[in-house]
Length: 313
Image 1 (tube, rainbow, N blue to C red):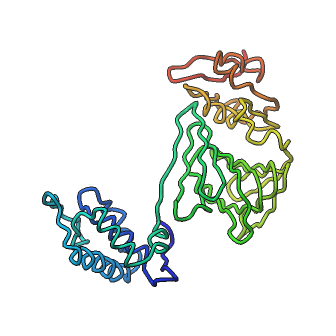
Image 2 (cartoon, rainbow, N blue to C red):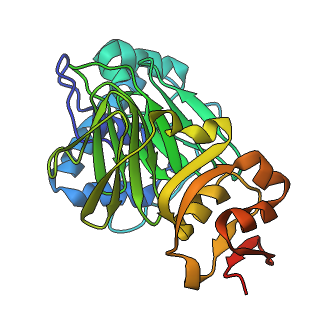
Image 3 (cartoon, rainbow, N blue to C red):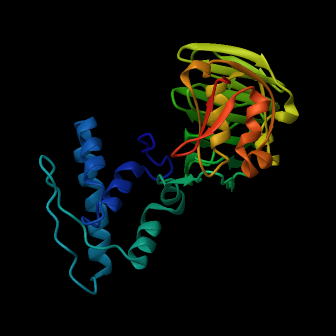
């Protein structure tokens, strides 16, 4: 849920209004999330009641009636709230007229994009930026806040249209990033890694405030940030079918490779921390994962669920 906010132009509590709209259909409503929001602040219940009243007054003014009775649902305790009837297109139009187009557009409009193993997907954003997802990745976005993204898992390349007045922010786990006009890659997993191809990124702006320029990367392991050099042309190289590593542990390498295969690659604990330097041709690995053997000096064994990298005997 986006942070609580009022529309500056109309004084409309867009967060409470969004909850009122979400709870209009008690069957599909997310009661757990609604209860959590109510309990987060004693004032939320009063705000919700005011927003719900606005919707009900608009409905009564239009005399909108549903074609069939709405299903009856009982809210779990301790929440007991009156529910609204189904809101159709006419109601939406009336609400837009009542609160203004800007306030309506400012309502949180979250959505998520996910990819399966072996899939990549480019997501254009309304501000001219884009996010390209590697396999097994998920990014959470909001149409009302196109300058913000949350990388929930996996890896993504961000190509950002710079706007100094409205910086682009990315949240990757506990790590916050702010764009300074750039193309950068963010990878989550056992370690979080940020690499910059163009422009610059501010890492942890409220803490370490570490600036990364093109050709620089940082690896985050717990509270430790380790800066390193990268070849800018290799940042996001997975879009062209290659993965480049300079001393990354085999466990991380296997995790990255697995995003682009139908079956995962795992590493025996005895060699998981061994560093690897080199470039992997993803198409060659897709054809035959055994090519990883001589490249990494390991034995590649087919396991029940995928491929296992083990020490050579």
